[in-house]
Length: 320
Image (cartoon, rainbow, N blue to C red; front, side, top):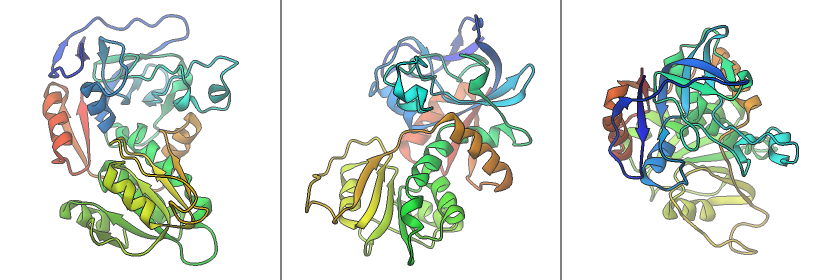
C-alpha cells in the first residue's frame, strides 16, 4: 500500500510502498479516507518525542470499516492493564505506557490502518469524514481543554475567557466557549488574518500581543511559548484557571505571590474515548465552522511546510 513512513527524525516526507497491515487477534482494519495534519506531527518529525522508527505518521484518522461504515479512530492507545490507574479510569491519553498511533504505532498517513480493537473506532453517522477528521485530535484536545474551564466560567458574574493562539485548535475552542459558556471571549494571536477569523467564529474581541487588557477567569494557551505563558501568568484572575496545551517549551515561576491568589495552572492532554464520542455527537448537532484545506497524500511534505510556516488558515487534511 501507499504510506508515509518516517524512518528517522528530520527526514523529508514522501509516499512510499509499505506492507499492508494484517490484523491479528482483536485488531480491526480500516480503509483510510483521510488524515488531518497536526502540529504534533511536526514535533514527531522534528524528533521532539520518543518514536519507534520506522513509523507511519498520522493520528487524525477517518476511514471506512467493513461493518461500521465511516469511522474516526481514537488514536490514544493505552496499555489497558488492570494496574494502570489512567487506563482503568478511561484516561488512556496520559497512560505512561501508551502506544499512540502515528508515534509509537503506525498511523493514518496510509491507505489502510489497524487499530487494537473495535472500541477505538467511533462511528461518524452523517458527518462528512474529511470535514470531521480534525476532530480526532485538534477538536478533541480543544474540547477537553475548554471543559476544564467551564466550572470556573459558570460562577456568578460576567466571566472573561482568553484563547491564546487562533490556529486550528484555538478556532475550535472559540466555538466551544461560545456554545458552552456565557463568557466574553477574547483571542490573542500575532496574525491579523487569524484575528479576523477568530471574530468571524464568534470571538468578542481579537488582539495582538501588546493589546491584552485586564484579567481573565479562564485562559487557554494553545501555543505554550515563553511569551504566551508569561501572558497567562500575568493575566489570570484570582481563583481563575490557566490551561496550557501548546508544546513550545515556555516556563514561568509558580508559587505564592507569583500568580494571582488561588489561581490554578494545569495542562491538558488530548481527550478520552468518551469525550470523542461526546464531541462527534456535539458536532452533529452544532456544526463547526473551522476552515479545512485538503491536500493529496503525496503532497505530505508541502502540507507539513504550510503548517510549520503558519500559511495554513485552518486544518489540513491529507486525502488518500
